[in-house]
Image (cartoon, rainbow, N blue to C red):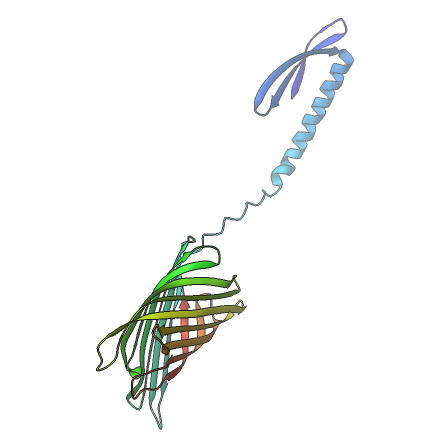
Length: 290
């Protein structure tokens, strides 16, 4: 605000005040006694001088820090790919090789897609001792924060279990008993159809019942453990089943790489003649996360 004395009459002064408030300009004309008008002018001049002296100091102060940018949205696709290789020579020559990947698409809606593949091969003195390929794809639809329905397809080829191929298409209901950044634990069960082909036997088709559970827990920011158990039964003969059990530990090396050690056990309760029920594999691999 600024003020000027524009005239006097009978010991009174006429004062014009120029004001700026909220971007609006105003002019006010008042009359005061000469003594009061002098006090107003003195106060205004003092304020102007003080403001002029403070302006350089204010200009030297650092600007207020800008707020941090918002965090980027979580990725829609996540997963990992791993590779392991082992060689021995001397009294015996062994070779083993494994490759695996898992991927998940979570657009933060009700739909979640998961898929995974595992291939194992090993030989001893030139003779193959393992040659297994397993693949699974699964679509989940959330009914609530914990409950979901799912549909999935599973494929298994294992000549050492006399399985040319086993394909199961199933669907059912699942529930998350724990779902936090540290611990995840879910159970599910369902039914569907299975097609199985064994050497020298025509493809058999039968109804199937399936159930399973999956558990993971972060021990620290760089270490985690996983465990899972899944079963596939013939609907008309629960004594004929395929069980898979897996447990593993992973240690992070960098933000994108980790070392994994997994134990995989596969049991076919009624295997074809000449094959064993149980196959156990220890898998060591280097994983890349994306």
